[in-house]
Image (cartoon, rainbow, N blue to C red; front, side, top):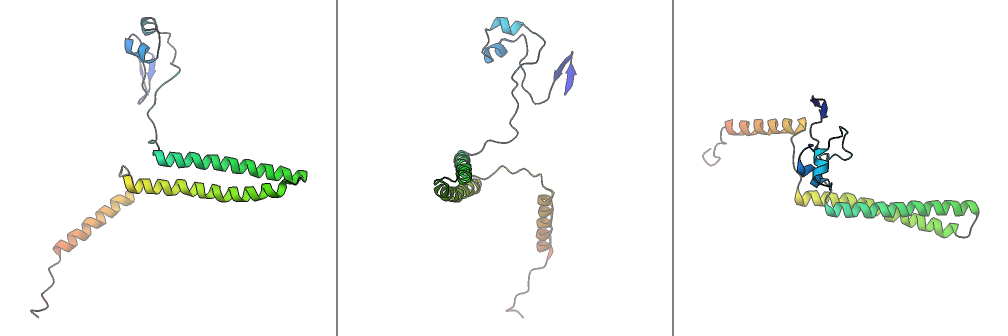
Length: 160
């Protein structure tokens, strides 16, 4: 973050520059009147780059499904609990439904995990060498290759 002429400019954040027509049109303003007027206030909406990449569609679908199933299971558990406290005849079927819902919710959460693993395996991920372990493995691999090249070829057994 650094100052320019009394205004603060943050790195990595898109800001509309007053006096340009594109900013007013992009914000859906009235055009010339918004472009020229500079109130000195910070804009209400600032575009920032995404911190994490967007989830793959199949993974997001499985995650939404899992959240809905878990929410319904929690509501069923609350109904079973309240029916048990009230001594209602509905308590036993509600408890059975909650047990079944727990099994289904567990399955749904595992489905998210498996779907993500399958997607990553099929489509790959963008590798960023941030791990020191990766660099150590690379060095060991290079050392083994160097040793293999330096080692003399094994003598022919038929000649011996």
